[in-house]
Length: 264
Image (tube, rainbow, N blue to C red; front, side, top):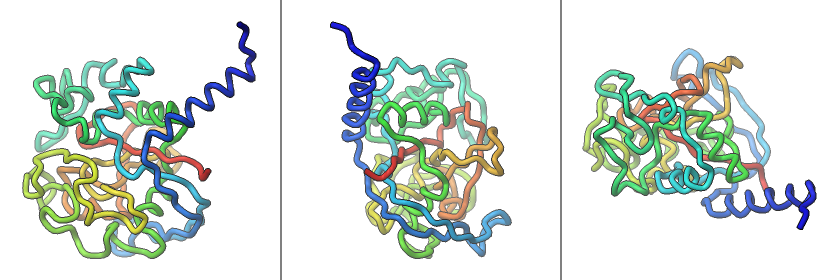
């Protein structure tokens, strides 16, 4: 039986919509977000951005979700192809054998951590996952809108810093080292800190793992913006207005992602 190009396109589109339906997406209404932080870093000057409606995953992509994608697509991530990735050991070290299945080095595994956020995923790998599900990475503005809600706030829950074990998975108060005061030495299962939810009900937007966006700092393709802070950071880095950048082709053990999509 011959399948026309149009019929094939419809089949692919339908499969992508079905795949996206498997992910828990939160609808974010159109509105204005005040980005940045007047008391933050030099490049956090507050500015208003008007956004249309969009959708974003309620939680970060998990090891189980990425494993299903890798099996279905045959995707080999950047660290798997290069044989090495970045691991935080009180400083960043390029470690042979680190990848998403061995996130903290070749001696580690994700066994028993199917509901933890996947890490050691490059921005390009993250975009491939999202595209497979008919989605994309969020822009920095979309990310901040989903984290802040309808009013400016420093953290998803308000202006006060996270307390130990209450609202986020993060490191020591003095940057930067992992600790288990929140119940987890490194990554935590997604959604484990509901008191840290954003006004829209989006979880883990502060701490656990940094998240890739589709935005580039100053339009530089080598500087992909990450948001949210990770398991080894202090509260300053968990602020909504804070960001840092990394090249799009590397994996790190404190960086994951979530997908976004246009409004249905």
